[in-house]
Every structure is written in C-alpha cells, then in structure tokens.
Length: 396
Image (cartoon, rainbow, N blue to C red; front, side, top):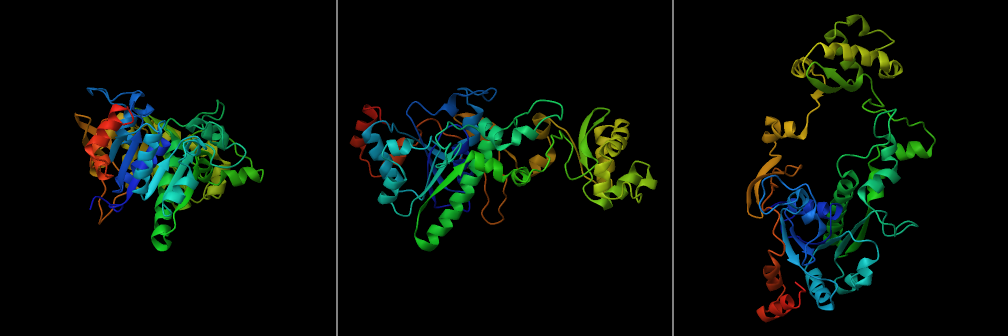
C-alpha cells in the first residue's frame, strides 16, 4: 500500500500554501491527489526562493507542497472547463479548495451544486475567516490570521514590536485542520453514506492552537509578551554559551533539584524560595541569572552533554542548515532525496507521522504543470479527439 489513505481520491483546487498543505498531507498519507491548476500554473510555481541549482528553477513552494500529487491543467473560466471539473469531482471522495468564499458559487461549482451531483462528496473549504460570520468575505492570508488571532501580540521580545512567525503558521495549521477534518468526514461518510461541507478558517485554526490564551483573554487575564521565557516555568529561556545559544527549561520540581546540584548550588535544591515552580516563577530573573552564568562558561556541546547526562532538557539553537546535517534528522528520514521536475536528489522534507503498517514517504516529486492531464482525462472517459479539442481551445 502507498499509505493508509490508499484508494481515496482527492481533487485539489487550491493556490499558495494552506489549501496545498491540506492536499500534501492527504497525498503523503497515500491518497491519489489530483491538483487542478489554470493552464498558466498557480502562483506557487513562480514564487521565490527557488531551490539552488535547479534547472529549470523550482520554487520551494512547488517542491514542498505538491509532491505526491498529479497535475491537471483546467481553465474554469470556460463553461467546458467547468464541465470537465464536474466529471472530475464526481470521481472524487474529497474536494479541497481555498478560494475566497463565494467564488465556487459564482462558477456554479458551490456546495449546493456539488452535493446535488454527488451526495457523498466531502468538500473542504479553507479560507482566512471562514464561510460565514461578518468578516467572512475579507481577503484572508496567513499574516492576517496571526495578527487578528492575538498571536502576534505575544510573539517577539518583551520590549519590542509584535512579530509574525517566520513560517506560514496560520496556513500550516489551516491545512493541517483541513486534512484532519477531511479524514473525520471520510470516516463519517463510510459509516453513513453522507458527504458534508467542512469549513476551516485560518483564524479559527490559530485560535484553536493558542494554548488556551483566547479563554484567558476573554476572562481578562494578563498576558504579557515574554520573548523566550516560559509562562509556566522557570528557569526557561535561551542562554548564551561561549560558542552559541541553547534553549533550556526546568518544568518539574524534581528537575530543579538535579539542576541545583549540576550548577553547584545544592543548597537551593530544597530551599522553599526555589523548590516549587510557582516560587521559581516569582524569582524568574534570579534563576535565569544562575542558568546564564553556568552556560556562559561552557560550549553548547558541553552544556548539552551535562544536561542530557542528568536527564534534563536542553537543545542548541540551530539554523535550518545545521538541522539538515543532524544525524538524528537523517535517522528519522525527515529529508528524502527526490526527483523534482527533472532535478535529481532534491532533499525534500518528509512526512512527520510514521506508520508501522502503512509507511508514508514521498513517492513522487512535485510534477511539471499539466504532466498528468491526458492520463486523468483518459481515466474520466475523454476520447483522444475530445482531449485534442480541449487543448486546442486552451481549456487544458
């Protein structure tokens, strides 16, 4: 089997990151994902940075998100293109889209039309602010969800400006929740025969993953920006060693006792001013200072080794280039050499979940635009002359 979702067909009508991430996860899990793009290609194919040394140049977005998919070009602005799409949708278990709410309805491809055509279809719609609510028609992109959710207000240095995530966090979470919801809806369909419409908003995904801060905010709790400090523990921060920085944290009281001995302050192990998490949080600056002084006299490697010997958590703050060279990441198969559009041995990030019976991996690199158009149209029953006609009209 190609993965736990082998035999499931997904049609993906998406652009940029959130929608393609949903399809990427389903494809990694073994589904047959057909990505539908305009004949000129979707925007992710043209956005930098491009993978170094690729010829032709391949966008990091295209390579990362569109592996394990087949590519069908289709112009939905034409009625014939929409007719082709309806035939494709009728063959699908799941349809994923991330257009502005209302666009599919304008094309005659909205939920009501799709449901009437195929009653057990699952439609996953991913958007910035959702399919309903007073702001649902607003343009919605990842940084807006980070800002509107409250996330940015807590991200960054305590005395600095609000900072967005360096990754597409809202898009990633929206795609992740879309894939989870699709699988849940698929389970329901397999039990009842009923399809349904799944509405995922980037804003909602950010709020769900807010560590309960939305509840705290609603109840008036104080939520200061803490930078690299940890709200529920101390010492917990980044600390400078002689050759770099480490992230370390003491979350349980038993670990504090070990740390006190490690940093040659055994008298603090059972001192009531430090022996509980609440007491240490009250003295955050003091315990951070103790950690900082200890780390400053050691290299990152020495500090990590000492912590790990005591079963205490610490990790060097690394660049992605350093992480890519980590033997443990190699052990976990998180970089998988893959051929992408004729470029060989591209180290693509592999699936996070590991399955014991239905292994997941990158089976195929991201395809060239329209690479599977004839193959898919043939599966849908289009004769060669029909395919030639569609191509001549620029519809595929």
